[in-house]
Length: 468
Ligand code: ADQ
Image (tube, rainbow, N blue to C red; front, side, top):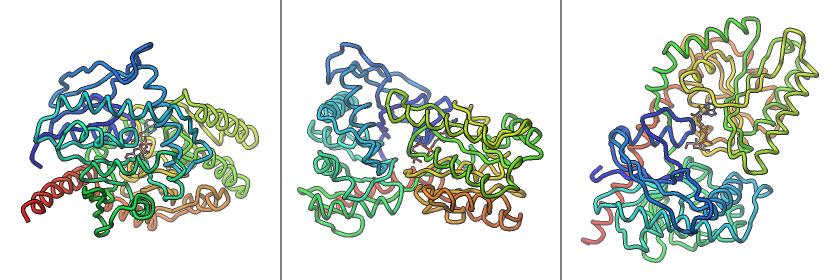
């Protein structure tokens, strides 16, 4: 790739420090390798600040330049809490029931995107390659182009893209989706998302479909493709072998020597299907007496976006569900569910995965889900645990050797968990080997490289088209 890499995402993190959260991990890793600029919101909210304005700050973090802007309270509430997390997040996760279409949100979303564009444009050099991430910033390239920026620009959507009929519930869907044509490349997590995009541009945006991956609208050609995100396998393997992870795995195995452990690690978000998972576990105990006093679910959930109502609701629901199971099925020496609401230090995470016989990754909808991949990589080669994976996670397209479940079906999921807990060693090893091979092949380096190569190719084909 020629030119400096400029990454833009709503939240940024110091790439020298370990981060929880898929995007921060993947992007930090990419920038640390090549160097470049990372631009985003500072995390500061200015009470009484002027909407559409925010101070720009630039600092050096190793090889990476970090540039951030503040947001006024009004912009933060309308752009971040409002349009991004009360409209786009629920709708893109197929949850129209949780979306709140407040008329004040959209102007704030545009204002914040314009602010980002205005401040970023000041820092851009002609040869820069701009890589914009996620649903907060879909119209950013459109706003940059309005300011005359002609750099190569790519967009990657980390969350799912729903079918056109669901997208169309967003009052501004047409404008929003059309702004994607300001990019040279749009990337999605899965083939399912890609199909939804292609159906959308044909039926709603009335763009011309040139082939499976090229679309034109108002004189601009957009390439769109699935680039399933991966993890840094080498780093995670190292982490799994390090002292801290081994210690955690050792202690857990000792403490639960007579039990069979199941593990769930998620952000506490309604898309992750945690209450459904706990109900499936309850069904397992109800249906299979031999699992009582034996199967133990450790569910770790890190608090997330706690200022939104839907998140308070799920927290209350989980408290109630876990308490009820422990009350109904627990014994003096056995708690069926250990529910821990906190972030676990990244160094310890692989140890937890490794101590578990079953990894439960059962989102109702997920762009990809990196926990599924981490679980597989952390397993011991000779005695691996089993991944139970929702068919509605983007990861299911790649990880077909997992036991796939429909998380809405508590009974079916419970039966699959039962099967996972009894799976013979030979089958566990075969499945694990196949999964590990695919995860290694499509790791985060592969993801970054294929996306940036594709973005590079769009520039070359544009040059060819101009010359012809
Ligand atoms: P997320 O929704 O944040 O990301 P995910 O892909 O599962 O979800 O990544 C979560 C990361 O955070 C993992 O690395 C996991 O280990 C870590 N994590 C989660 N809970 C934790 C806890 N309690 N303690 C410590 N660490 C925890 C979004 C999309 C996903 C997509 C990613 C990357 O929603 O679908 O896979 O971006 O594109």
